[in-house]
Image (cartoon, rainbow, N blue to C red):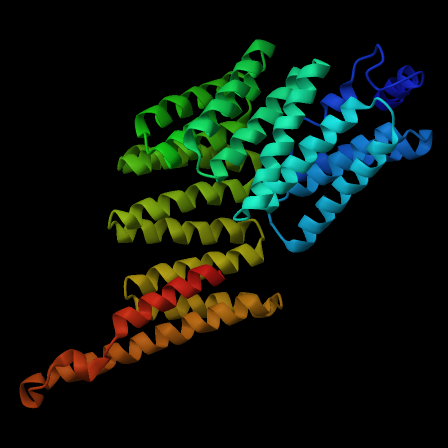
Length: 406
């Protein structure tokens, strides 16, 4: 008999909580990839169908919704699917008597969905806060410290999105305290990393951000969790970059990349690298920033990720345009255009062709400028009027549009 069947046999006489461990409920509150969460959800739903257990089905539906939330991309289709699963779970849960675990699971899944898909929507953010708080309260009554802690993290995340710094820090600290009481070092590390982000992005307190960021990395190292340690180094890189310490930021990114390569996680690796590119360019270290941006293209290429390779090329072309390197920008945009055409990505083709047009326009303007410079003493005319009036403003507006599109 497998794990879930043993739990079901123990549970047939009453609610999920009737005298036996609630492992299937507790497993809703985990840190896992979208793929792992989906496997767990499918296992629950298959068992629920085989044993005709609606309680397990509620939990399986909630886990399925959370698996969608855990996916990298955000789309209207994913949002609709996740919300539909939560509504189905809620409807089924209302038909069952004394199923508080199900109510807690539905509230937690709903909070996660509204938080993930409702950014910028005040009503959805309020719903995330309401459901997260309800999940935390229910889990506390049920004696589920793990569920309470993860629900508190979600509430803190909702306050973070709403830019309410003190409340975000308060709830993330509450979660850290519950995790610490459980002896859950992973949960503590996650909480400290979120607190570091609160101080960095909402309070602009680099010192406190660094203290919590280092504490998180130390805990991840103790439990030998390379994925979370890599995420921790990424956060520290952002902190040091904000402080202007590019040497430390670069070292943190290097640490993150080493771990990501061992995990074959090119997405996490390139996210850390993008943080460094931004910092270098903001501090006018153009050559160094472009070098790292080129490495990002190579990482996606080596991973066989054609779509992200194309968008990395678009990002590189944008950086080159911003610094008036029109010739190289045109070459990079052409490479992106070739990739997007090969994978039939119409939006990618549109953006890359716009970049090519901008680069070619810049090249032509440079040629005119050079010709005018050679004859300036004979023409005796203001140079900007001949070359391209309003170029800087037009180019900047174009860059902003490209960035949004990409």
